[in-house]
Length: 365
Image (cartoon, rainbow, N blue to C red):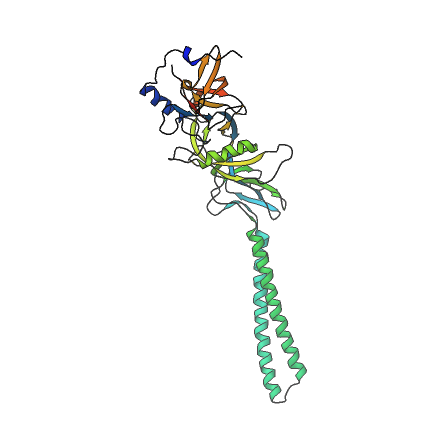
């Protein structure tokens, strides 16, 4: 290491002009908002600056998908009578995707209606017979066994009528299930049936998805998930928060849209050891479909422990770089380069003795 020149041999210092000082103030505040950053200048002393953590930008790419998707299954075997929507079309307001032929079920319901009328007539006749034999029993003109037999017949016909009612409700439910339903307004994403086609019970005949909200799934490491959480909490004046870029809609200049965390999978994958996160796009996007390419930028702290400081805080002597602490002690650092998009005029510096939050003095040119 070369010796440090004595301060008496240094050239006469030139104080920093006020316009240059104002520029450095703005540059120190230009760090990404996803990381906590102290102001570049400390307190009321314009000769002190605070080291800021250097960050690296990680670019992730995901693809949109529907908020939810359901398979459409035939609950009863039969012939398809009609299909209400094709692929890409919305499910009608009544929620019907396809209708199965229910002719034989309706005929059975009519047969039960006739059976119910017959039992009602028998019950009415049996009730009159019971009342008449009760009067004869009071006059001692009939036996008790005959009255008991008539009452038993009345109870049997009543139970039979109730059983007919249960069978009718079963058939009505089967008839309702000949209508293959889906949530109204959802878009059809698959269709495997045509009118007149025979389908079996439990056969999948299509699929529908909810594109009212678009989700973008990501698999993040714990460090990336922490950066995502920090970005989501930093709302500020409305310009912060999570932002996604729609890469396919405008290739020249990707459109930025606000987003939020829709859900986080609490499960653990021992192979990837990543957190599965679904982000929801909180803006109107056209067309609403899956497969749109979306970009996510995350600001992560540099693993080197580098910090950002204005160039005026760094003293260069014989290709060595030095910082002067608040108490006057000097620290040698390694210059890693400019800060890039984190602020013009800031340098990335690294040293085992320098941490984010340390304060240093400005040098004199």
